[in-house]
Length: 183
Image 1 (tube, rainbow, N blue to C red):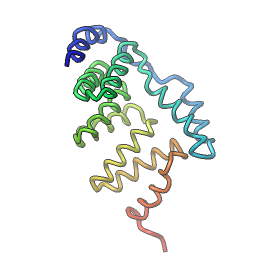
Image 2: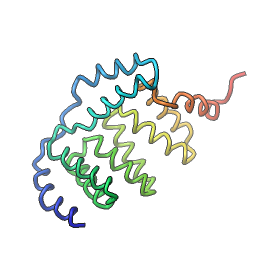
Image 3: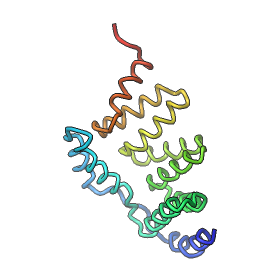
Image 4: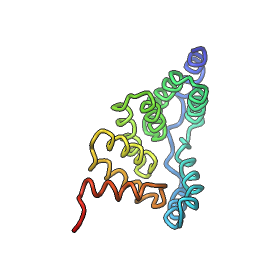
C-alpha cells in the first residue's frame, strides 16, 4: 500500500503535466505489411511482438513510467496497486489505447467482466489495429453467448494478423455455429 501512496504522491503530479500520447509511428505500417507476408505463426511471432511493443509506447515518459510501475506491481502480485495506477493512466491519458487494454486485462482477471469488456472496447476504438485486444474481447463475447459479435472481433483480428495462432481454426468453427454449414 505504501507503493501506491508513493506513486500517487510523487508520480501522478508529474504525470498530470505529461504530453498527450503521440500518434502511432509509421514503422507500424511496415510491420503490418511484414505480418501479412508471414507464412507461419512462428514467422509472425517476432513481428507481432514488435507491433505490440510499438503499441505500448505512449509518447509520454510519465505515462510510460506509470505503465512500467503497473506492470511491476502486477508481477509482484499487488493487483490493487496495479489497478489504481492503470486507472490513473486512463484518466491522465484517456486516448492511450494500451492503458485501457492493460486495465481491461486486469479487470478480466478480477472477474469484472463488464468493466473488462468496456475497457477492451475502448482499446479497439482507440486503436483499430489492436488485434490482441480484439481477440480477447471476442473470447469474452463468445463466453457470454454473443457468437456473432465474437465472430466479428475474431475476423477483424485475423484480417490484421492472418497468422494469429489458432484463430483461423476458431473462426472456422464459430462460423459453422453462427452462419451454419453449407450443403
